[in-house]
Length: 216
Image (cartoon, rainbow, N blue to C red; front, side, top):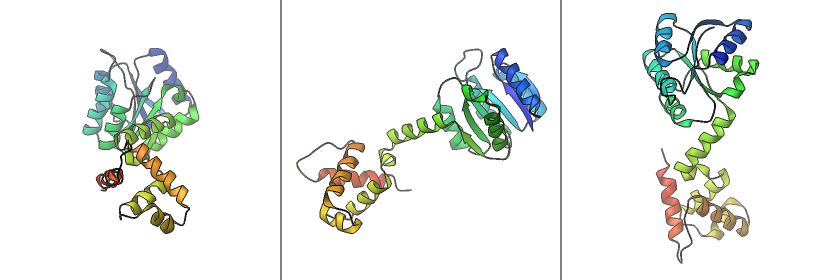
């Protein structure tokens, strides 16, 4: 496996190179900025580029932006994004546009050699890998954008029957649960969808509309 490492910290860059070399990985090039990263990838055609999200000159998102551009130019290139803290914007963009051969790990996990090697091998083989902390954050983020995604499977069942215009008692009968359970599920649905109490059944309609908006 051939790897290019793009990391602005010389200490971490050299440390990663040594760890990978000792593990039998060919480190083709080490770079400290996005410009030389692009040049190294064009020259060496690695299997995977390990890229720090924040790189010179502004230390904002040069690395991530370069990774997106490189994936556009080299579809077969694997990319492993690295960051000190969770930054999901570019991870989401890469997942949407280039889900294959993509990974994202927090830097405190890359010092674990088996974890790092496993991630690189998965990416080189065409897979996708996300740091567990990043994954949980992405799920919370998407749940905030699409509240229906935060519903449990049982709450989705209740909402589906609710869409048929059934009463709470009818929902309980259909799902073979007691009435109190249905009432609890409905209360949770309203809370998760941000539907506040009203004197009529307007919330039930809004809940169903929310579900319909999530249909593919």
